[in-house]
Length: 243
Image 1 (cartoon, rainbow, N blue to C red):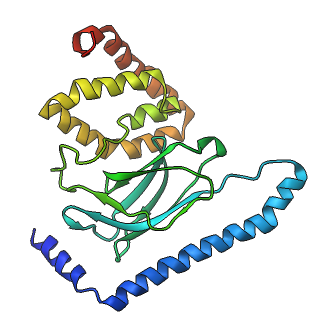
Image 2 (spheres, one colour):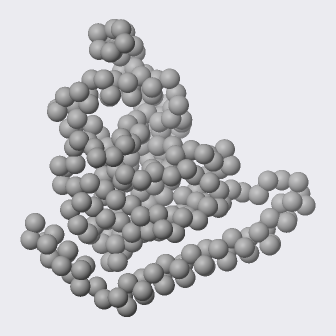
Image 3 (tube, rainbow, N blue to C red):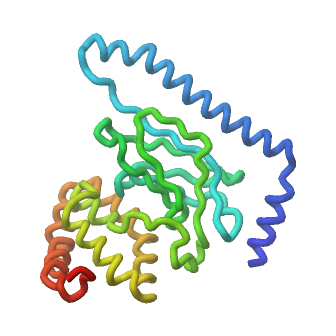
């Protein structure tokens, strides 16, 4: 707590000129990105048009501040972006409590959800992925980062990071079973809620590794997730609210 108070006092002492300098720096970065996109449109896109091919999808750019209910977020804290539950980009919080992320994707990803974690804690903001979109004032906030952020004061994030990575999609029927079990059983008790909190913290980086290797995706899906889903399906009448 003393460190948090000190951090808060130091942040309050930032001068107006420092604040304007940070805003100017972010503006320069955004303008640089827009210039690069304009150059791409002027040089690269016509070449694809002549070949009759679609140009590659552009990353979705996010930038803004990072904060928590505890106060400032420490410099160097990891900020991760997940597209439909699969990790796509990572950055670190700057000394000015800001971040920048380029989230890659394909045209087929347009309309899918981008979620964020800060220090392993789910941020309360999500976005819709759009090729070439620039969101330079996309501020991220989290609840307490010390483990006392239950119950959630914001919409619950996607639960099945690992399952999504294993199946390659967040809409598989098996994942719906897992989500239902989360909502009906796990979130109905304090112990289950603590387990969900722990899962939110540790699963995104694991899912990121699984998503990059076909062998791991198959092994996790066949050897771990499918058996769990089979058991939940078999016992559905025992724990479901609708049966």
